Every structure is written in C-alpha cells, then in structure tokens.
Length: 249
Image (spheres, rainbow, N blue to C red):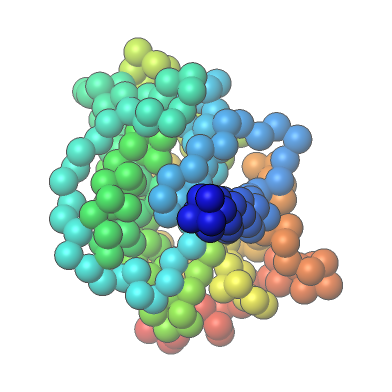
C-alpha cells in the first residue's frame, strides 16, 4: 500500500509539472478572437487553420544548447496526425512551383532526432517561392540561431499573412499567402519583427525589419502579450537595429 501511495504521489507530481509546463507555454501564444486548432509538438506549437490548410502561427523557443547535435535531416515530409481535421499532405505541393517552407526550422532542432523529424509535419510547412525559402528566409533563420548563440535564448513566432491570398494549391486547396512574418523576442526587453513578400527578396535583411505593431495590424494577433505593458508599448513600436545587427549585416 505504501509503494502504491508513493507511486501515486510521483504520478501526481509529474502530471502537475506537465500541466505547469503547458500552461507556461500557452502564455506565449499569440492572442486573437479567431484562433485555430492548437497543436503541440515536442519543441513547437502551432494554430492550424482548416480554412487555409496551414498554420496561422508557429511558436517555438531556442536555447543556445539546442544549436548543435547529430540529428540528420531526412526530408520525411508527412501529414500531421495531431491535426484533428486532417492536415495538408506532401502531394498538395507536387507541380505547384512552391517550396515546402519550414516555419519552425529543421536546422534549429538538430540537437534531437525526434525534434527535427517533427519539423517535417505538413502543418509546419507553408508554400514559399523558392527564391524566398532558399534566400532571405533562410538568412533570417541563420540570424535567429546566431542571436540565440549570442544572447542565450530566443522566443519566436512566425507564420503567413493571410490578408492577401495569391492562389490555392493541391487537392486540399492550401492557401498561398502574399507575405510571411517572423517575430523574435529575447525574453526580456528586446523584440524585432520581419515582414517578407512571398517572392525572391533582393534587399538586405535589415530592409525587411519592421515594428511588431505593424505585423499585429496585418494579422490581427497580439504577440507576446506576456510582456508587461510598460515594456511592450515601447519595444513593439520601434526597430532596435543596434541590438540585433552589427555593422556587417
């Protein structure tokens, strides 16, 4: 009986820790009147839109110790079993001319094979013009890892801007957005947003940096509402180039 009681206490404690962890993560979700189905994976969470057959946003946290590892990229694109309505499939992209662009980057999850494999769920993909996916979007992903290595951690929210839809592709009619956004917060008093058109971007990365407020207007989301209002009102209205960029960028 005593062993059973101890085991029960351990299970209760473990469950409590999980609930607390999920609760803390939920505080970082973008806030909006129209949400989507919340889907939780090992290292990223997303809100899935059945209307658009894609994510409204993907949220993840990076730590410096996540930036190196032995995980191998397997390109095992597949439907997401956690999306109750059914997610898009790899076949939807066939012959479309669009890349299956990662929202939570695979390279940022190289520390763990399972974590990297999960980034290939189609719920984490978005139709991107190859010139964007392999160009400035890739550059931005590299920068967020550099900033994580420099400052220790970063919280990221990224996704499509569905205000303007170029077309739909595939049997599931995946919406192709005209723009993409990414918001990066250091967990304290610095935050930056990027807004890129779904096309090859010729300018340097700084050119696509915008105040967080402008992305909130376009998407209808309130990003990182966990930030105290006094700090939030100051940092979301400006772009602090001195903090995020050195002279060479």
